[in-house]
Image (cartoon, rainbow, N blue to C red; front, side):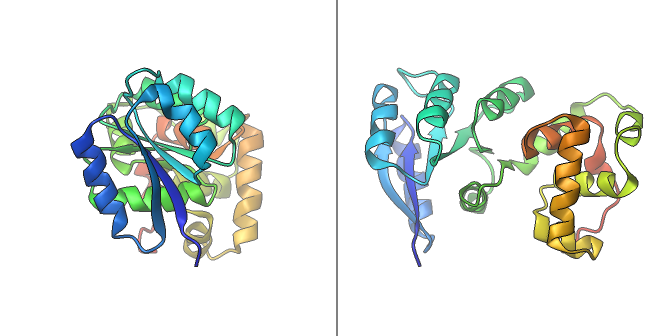
Amino acid sequence: MSKIRIVLAEDHHMVRAAVAALLAKEIDIDVIGEIADGFKLVAQVAELKPDVLVLDAKMPGQKVITAVQEINKNFPATKILVLSAHNRREYIVGVLREGAAGYVLKDDAPEVLAQAIRTVFRGEEWISPRITSQIIHSATKQENTFLQDRLTPREIEVLAYMTRGKKNDEIAKAMVITKQTVKNYVRSIFSKLDVDNRVDAVLLGIKHRLAENGLDDEL
C-alpha cells in the first residue's frame, strides 16, 4: 500500500517534532520533509512534491494566504491542510477560498489531524468540527427560507449532512440511497446555490444553521 506523502511546515521545532512523531504512528502516512522557514516553503514543495502539505498558519517569511495561492496555482496536485490556533471565521474562509483543502486547529484531538490528512488526500475538504460548532453558536438565529426557496427537501437534507462533516458514502447510508444519487444531489446543490465547491456549500449550510437539524448520527 502506497503511503500519503506529507511535508510538514511549522516554524516551532517542538510543535513540528510533536506533529511528526504523531504522524509517524500512522501506517499510511509518511512525513517526507519538514520546513521551518517560510522563505523556503514554495521551493521545498516544488522539490519534494508531497501529496499533502500540512502548513502552519504563521510561517516567518511567508504570508500563508499568499503561499496557499502560489502552491495551489503551481502545484495543484499538492493538497494544503492549514494547521492553526486561529478560529476566526473570516481568516478560515479566506484560506479555504484561496485553495486550502482543509483547516485543523492545533488543539484538536490528536486523531483529527490524521483523519483530516486522509480526507484532503482523497480530494475532499476538511474543516475542524470545533470550528463548525463555533460558527454555528456565534451565528445570528435566522429562518431557513433562503435554502427552502432554492433547494428541495432532499437536497436540504443532503446539505445538512454535509455541514456535519459527512462524506458521500455516509450520507448515502443514512438516507438509504446510492452514492451516485448523493453525488447528483451535491451537483444540484452547487448549481442552485451558485457555489463551486463543497466548502462554500457547507459554509452556507452553517450560516443557515443546518448542522443543528436532528439528523441520524449513527453512521
